[in-house]
Image (cartoon, rainbow, N blue to C red; front, side):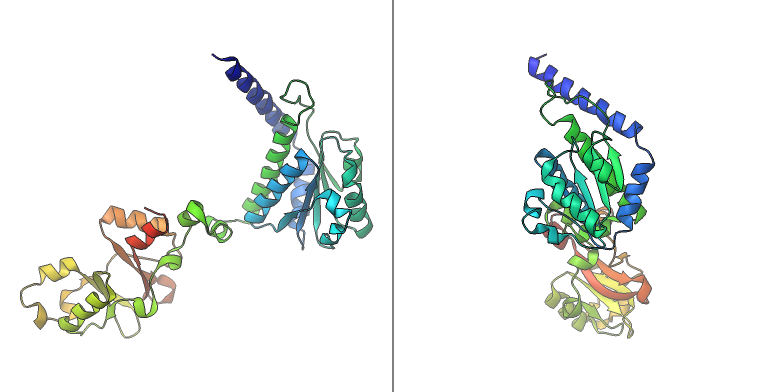
Length: 319
């Protein structure tokens, strides 16, 4: 085993032990911190200097992406005009391992002057930051993983984990769903996985439909013009009565043009709701070996609202 691997294991073990200390040491102050954040009518203003500032930016991003409006304010910039970013209704969350970061002083004073609730996170209960805070979250006295005790390692890991704990507690209390999460993450693979059927489906004039009594000659034209290889048979009120696929056409080849849509259609086809995740639609299509699904809204009288093709899902990064 290399010396580098030994160092890595030592660092990870030190930090994991500190995280366990953090978990074991949680008390009512954590509940009060969550309640304070829940009661905010404005935003969560998060700040820290140096390495704590980097952690503060990440916590702000996590909160903002999970339904809690939040942004990072640099403490030095706050002293030169950015204090105006904090207002009544906001909550301030300030991070400082020592609790004595001088750059935070003006922000702390601003919260006290204007009655803005302050949650402080620091490693010493007797520090200036935690004495001034309305809610004090104390990090356990755990050694930094660098060995010399001067490089923020364990302390920043604990602070980041505490921020994640606050974000998840807020999420679960608000019953934040994957669909909600997708609203803040429309791009990339994650956005694709959380896309709704309604985001990808074809609707309006692009939807291939015919009436029950439509002759098959007209039905074949509709299938050809819309280009999906399928057509929906809908009642006058828009309800989906059945579908006609290439397989249905082959089964009724003899005398096909003498039939109408009702004679050929497959009744009660597999459908999906517009609010379902597109990933669920892909799973259904793969399981049933089909290439498209009509989108039917059960809350709207089973009316056909759209069509989702497997190619739409593949283009979005699913499949």
